[in-house]
Amino acid sequence: MALKQFWVMAYRDLVRNKRRTIITFIAIALGLILVIFMNGLITGMLNNMLTDTIKLDSGHVQVRAESYEVVKSSLLWQDLINNADEIAAKAEAMPEVAAVSPILWAGGVLGTASESSNVRVSGIDPTSTLFDPIRAGLTGEFLSKNGRGEILIGKRLADELNLDVGDRINLAVGNPDGLPEEGSFTIVGLVDTGFPGIDNANVFLTLSQAQAITGSGNRASTVRILLHDDEDTETVVAAMQSPGMTVLSWQELNEFIMTTVDSAMFFYGILYAIIFLVVAVIIANTLLMSVFERTREIGILAALGMKGRQIMTMFLLEAVILGLIGCVIGIVLGAILVYYFSINGIFFGDMGDAIGDMAIGSSLYTELVVANLFVMAFWMMVVIVIVSLYPAWYAVRLEPVEALHTL
Image (cartoon, rainbow, N blue to C red; front, top):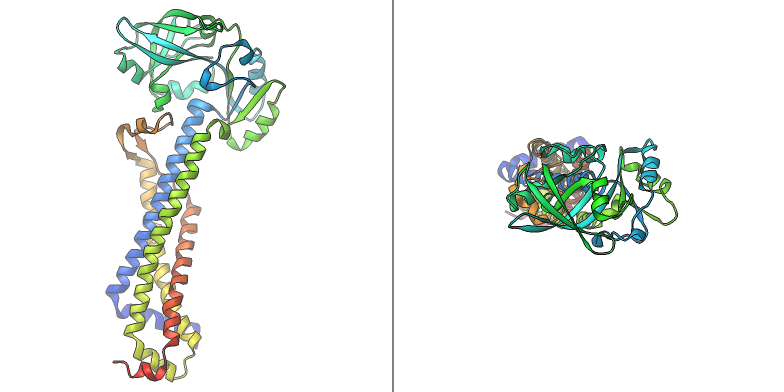
């Protein structure tokens, strides 16, 4: 029997019970739509989170003294870089580098007449394009090149302390000997990045002001480097190696996020398996019902000389037709859904606060990866074909004589 005849028979059998066939199409399509949407949601969330964190906080590469520990914000001279300008100049000369700046970190206390809050002080180069993402969400002015007496603070921190642009505040920090040093500054801008770790507890001074108030001389805690393309990370890391220095890649700087990515993909895999299982049960049920309804017909076909493998082929083709139509519908609608939310986003307010210091804004954007659509559709088809083997095998095992006596 020609393959075309198998296709025709499979098609007629599906059309015979339109209601069940349509329900199966819908189940396959909905399952694939859900898988595609969840993939786009998780991919978009993780990629946006990582991209924003790299731009706002970590950069692609950082150079630090071997003994420096970020959690301690040490100001001991042996923990700081004493040739930060040279390192920054070396990085800036590399074609792979988009922006670079030395940064000095210190722990401090920001205070008004009635309230105070612990903060992380960041001394930065206000002329560097590395801080353009901070400029983008700024209310007021950015630090001037001299920056004497100027300070930027996170908007949420300002709201907490009832501060605004133009207000005068006191900042106390420790010096390398552990003794407090205090200065008075005017707020020139409020930083609103959507990154809780910055907006809630960060203040920015010019690097020279931070070095002066901490007594750190010309030293810096790190040299942060932003690249044009993250594919060049290993090249830049290798080029920036020098004795007494530790050079860290963005993967090492964002270990928590990388762990989150792995966890998210694990749970996505579980969800993927559950959806496939539901679709598999529906497909198996559809084909088994078809076998039960057509037992007499199968017996007649067998009596007329149709071989077992031909009967099996007919049922497998039914599954393939169901899968192909369902997958086409699922791919089209799933892609439209993911694309829509990649443009308009999913608004969820201040949920970012619940995710700690990771960069999460008020809206989450999905990401459409065309290759993923076909990968997921392929695996959906694999599951459909595998699960259809049992009903097809069951049909083949029917004895022609017994099947012919079935009402």
